[in-house]
Image (cartoon, rainbow, N blue to C red; front, side, top):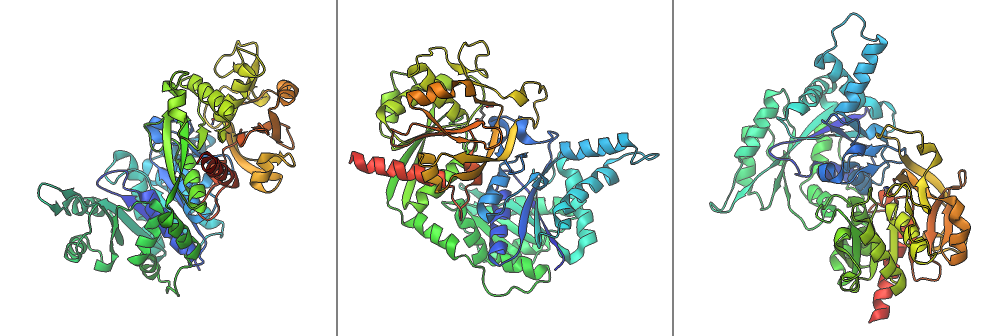
Length: 537
Ligand code: GLN
């Protein structure tokens, strides 16, 4: 079968969930046995989102091959269980950089380099890159932004050209919004009509419309939309708000999205998608009656997307343990000796979040001291792990000024320090220790028990590391370095073996946790939290 290309565009407003619709379709096609991947094209000038802070762009996701990516790639992996790579995320910055490099090399010698055809050709090249590998039957391309944005025009133009070239091997799904006007008690289709018109003006006729809505859209209204937008009535699909994003594939299948996509691309749908494991997960989610309460100590508490992968990894682990997840965000800047008892004592487990910079860090030390002394399951991730090391140095080893050189470059006790290979780096973009690295866990450690093995590989995103010259001192006092990189011997995991569950990982296990393959260390943490909860009753 020729590789087929599905484009997902969005209209009316942003945040409608193009990523979730793309992921849900991929999930269904995968469950039908097809090889599927999803890629995101983002219309901003940053070469990658690695230099954007969470206020701008939510969490920065990291692929196995070390690309700092849009958080939608996290959804793609969680829904499909297929790993993405740097080829799955392209930005305007990356496209322009490549075209300008080619221009300097002389690849276009004699020609005026223009948006059309040079930028659009570069976009098209990138769209087809994964298709050329022969590894996929379907490539779903999500175009970031909203139709009508100035900056997404070159992408829309590229989709127009590709649709012309690819014919029925391509398809366009347009996601729009049908608002409910409470005062009039009515759903309104006009924004959708306008948005489709805008797409048509740019030369693209969508094949399928997915309408995001808070209320059921009546059949006549869908027919009306179909009529106005040149789309067949069965291809007008509603995406009504649900209580979990993981139900969206099921909702899409109920309306035959997967079959419609296949038929429109001249593929005869055979049988039903194999969704049993997915449905079992949803059953567990719906049937859980008891709760596990986890506190996440971090500085981006008001941003629901800042810790996206951690939230999802915790949710997956809790669901498989038949628990509802009660996740509480605890603002690290507002945590101090006087309120820590009140803020943490209801929790069954505490996560100390990753992060950068000084803001909120002292609150993390307060939380960690309390967690360590109260022996509550505690999980430090990346900066969270580094904070575990610093808190232990200060309060157990008596090094009052212990710190990371990220926060205080002049401290006498640099227990967390810049990695050797980082010292000569001045460019900030894409230069951290990024991507998956092997890690060897000590036999018999809590971490090894959690994974059920000693050889693992997890993804990283950091510049600083545990300072190896302190290793013996820490180990003698009880903090064990139970995970290390087999080649460089960098410390990747620390733990306090005499505590219930007190583990810090320099890597980010949340990135590899998916619905069908939850990360074992999150499962182990949640299990410890449940055991602790039960021991309190
Ligand atoms: N700021 C720390 C470092 O760069 C930790 C990074 C993180 O938590 N992702 O090493």
